[in-house]
Image (cartoon, chains in turn green, brown):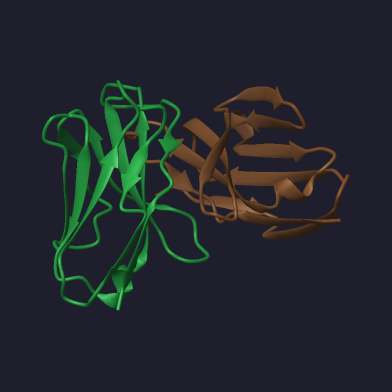
Length: 117
Length: 110
């Protein structure tokens, strides 16, 4: 597509429920990132994929968070047993850079706003 | 990890004024980007500028990598320039983990 696409744009769920957030990167981009932005703060890194594999998942806050990218394109961020503190905007970004040290320009989607009641 | 600090944290300008936003970082970088986050939350790419100077219309940016800072210049500001400006960097030798600064919140008034 022309840009990074994220769905849903808004998700309201109850504490304890499971949610999935989807990211469709720019066509041809090999690297994909997930970030989380809480109110009044800058985005914080969660996980980075190069192709199908998670090259760096050091930003995932705990084992309730998991992400996959099975075919090297679309990625899904999965959150189990959601908590109120998980409420935030989840941003996805992609870049055409490759290799273990990618320095390419990142392009962000519009984000998925998650609210946990 | 790398520290990224932006100043000023908040800025109010009258339409037509010029401004300079600063980004300081604590380690060497091989990627630096400036973003504008509009009131709807969209992160808009302004510059990809790990070093040197670039200009795009009323905006320009300069990164002095050896001294670990970058500047974003906004000239003849407009109300549509309002929002939060973020600087983000990738520390040299790391696998592209973009670290965001604290942001500068800009409000342009009539």
